[in-house]
Image (cartoon, rainbow over all chains, first blue to last red; front, side):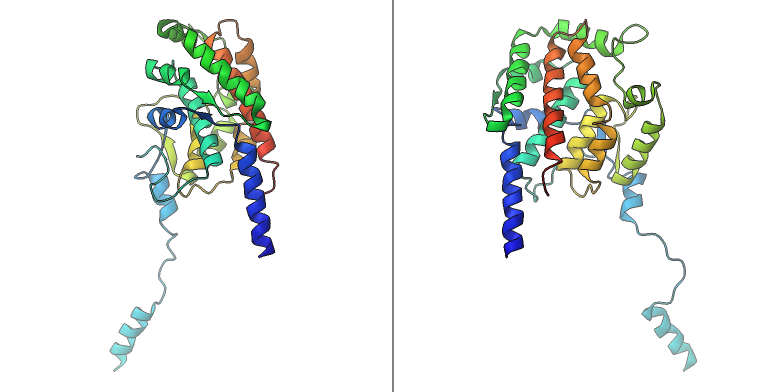
Length: 74
Length: 203
């Protein structure tokens, strides 16, 4: 509980610190209209696939395979 | 491809959103001559007042004033003279150049590795290397606001922003051919100062 309060206090301090950074009056609209002319998230590309797909562990016995072998013994 | 913006389901803290917005704005202003609608929007900004935001407030006011004076045709010439030029512009806005003294250097290779791991790439048809100042600003905006981008912001800031961009903004502020872009330089300098301080706050 005390830890949670501590984190909440730090988060509030960070929010207060950042209060002067923003420019109100169209700043958000401005960035959504003009965001990212050069870079993009590579959602369909190789980099994204590399992140999403786990490394192959090669052949290994799963429960399904063990069940199959069991049927062969009988 | 997407622009790496936040999915509808996840709300970003307003302070973090403001940081991402400033990086994206710097990216938009430094990736090419600002289009008329962007200049129009800059004319309407009202800087938020805050105890520790005085320097940023001043920078926003300077940018607003510069936008009000800006002439679109002159801005194109200014951007060309500053960053492109005949042969080269007055400034060379790449991390490789500022850190190593040459283009396409080690920092670009390292940045490309980070981007591959983050799943961020150049838009198709973009020829600028990823260490161009505008690209780096866009990337940091995406890291702050984007879903699932795990690289620690402070590490990215230290390696690819704070290591050189402050010097670029200082040079931009003093550049002979700069007019409007002096205000961009001021915003960049003040914002980097805020960022340096921000990363020292306890998480």
